[in-house]
Length: 264
Image: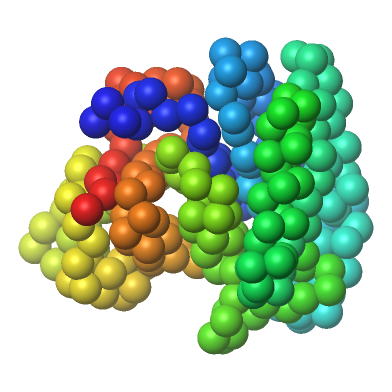
């Protein structure tokens, strides 16, 4: 799909599963991704990052080995960890001459035309100044992302990624996680799960399989990622789900395994 290879405006969503290791920020992985993203920016691409990792950074600071279940504690950890997460990004991107900016959002930032215009003006301003916006859900003052039972929430930033990509008219949403893409067959005992390399259209059957399938991916799992891809396809924005271990340019160029969701 030539549109993907020529994408100029790319939203990169980084999930908990790849940015953390052993309940800590994976600094080695972050260093590699920072270099790859910096290369894209210097090549003229307009990049937005949506990055998880604040809770993991907070757990690292407090030396916790197990993720707490208490919502208030998770909020507190997010507040403690967010500065470390951003500081880590700031220092690593600085090595490549890229400035960063932090943007924390909730659903309210997408609720009115005025709020949306303010958000897009800020992002476009950063693009013009060649500053990388790093976005996250504001876990500190909202429980939406941290509550599994919430009806209206940012599901591990996947829904936030879809909202951002739509509002900013991005050319591509790239979701980096710890698997090669969408696997189907988890519910069929006779078959091994198979990687689906291209999805022409997200059907209700596919959504149902991802909703029921077991997944280690953050709060939203694969279901929220596929749902985001389905929602964006309606607006002619393709989505790729890929393993964060691969080089980003190779992912976009289809040189490694990944799942590509086409538009319709």
